[in-house]
Length: 69
Image (tube, rainbow, N blue to C red; front, side, top):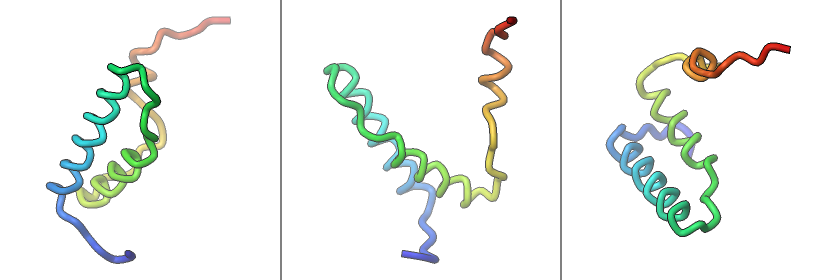
């Protein structure tokens, strides 16, 4: 549905549920549910806060060791 704005509470609940499902699947060595659902929920949550969309992971780049060639 286009134009429907949800509160952060239900979005956060769905994110927690998705995390619990992924954790349970990982503990049982089963297939992990798609991360696409979590990505969509995070995008929806970001839109509610008005924050800009990140185009790269700054934290990952800062903590990842550089590979010199």
